[in-house]
Image (cartoon, rainbow, N blue to C red; front, side, top):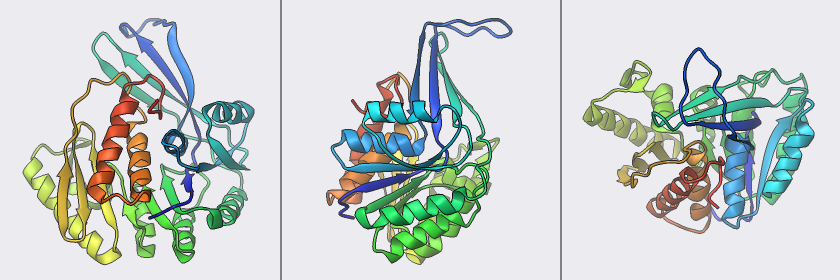
Length: 308
C-alpha cells in the first residue's frame, strides 16, 4: 500500500454531540454548560486524523436535510475535504454523555432515516469517478438504511479491479460479502469480528471471559481467513492488546492504559494511524503501533476524531 491519497468512505454521516456532567441523576433535569458539537462518524473521523497526519484524504458520503450546510461548513473548518451526493436523508445526531461523578461514558445512537431511491447509484458513480486519484480506499461503518447489501462489495470489487488497496472497518453482511474480492486488510474491533465470524464467543452481549478460549478461536478463524482471502487482520480490543494476523502468524501489540477524556473516535484514529503507516511502507506491527498512538492521542481530547 503506497497511496498518493486516501479515500475514506462512510455512508452514514453524523453530528456528534458531547455533553459532560459532574453527575447524572435519573428521573430529573440534568444541566451542563460543558458541551460541544462536532462532525462525527467513522468516515469523517478517519479522514480528519489522516489530514492531521499530513496525508491527502477525501471523505465520501451522502448528505441531505436542512443541516447539510452546517455539516459542510464544519468539515471545512476542520480541514476535511468532502465529496458527497444528495440523499434526501437528514443527517443523524449521536450523543456522548460523560458522567464525571462515576466516570461512566454513555453513547446514544440515532438510527438514520432511509436515503432516497437513486442515492445508491449516485454514490457508486461518485466513488468510481474518485478511484483513479486514490491509492488506499477505507470503507467503514454501518451504512444508512436504503442502501442495498450489494453496494459495499461492489465498491470493494471496483477498487481491487483498478489496483487500489482496500482497508475495511466493517462487520456483518458488508464484510462477509466483500471478502471474495480480497480486501488487503480488515480491521473491525474484536466484538464486531466475533459477531460476524464467531457468535459462540459472545455471552450477554459481551466477549466471554475465557480469554484463552477466545484467543484460540479467533486465531484459528484469522488463519483461515488470511489463507483463503489473502488479507491481513487487525482486531482492536479497547484497552487490551491489539491482535494482528498475517498469513499463519498471529501476534499482539500492547496498549498502554490511559484514563480517557473521551474515548469516542479512538478506533477511527487508530484506523487512520494504521493506514497512514502502511502507506509509508511500515510493517503491520509498526503500523499497529502508530494506530495505538493515534487512538491514545484521540482519547485525550473532548472532541472526537482528532489527534491535535
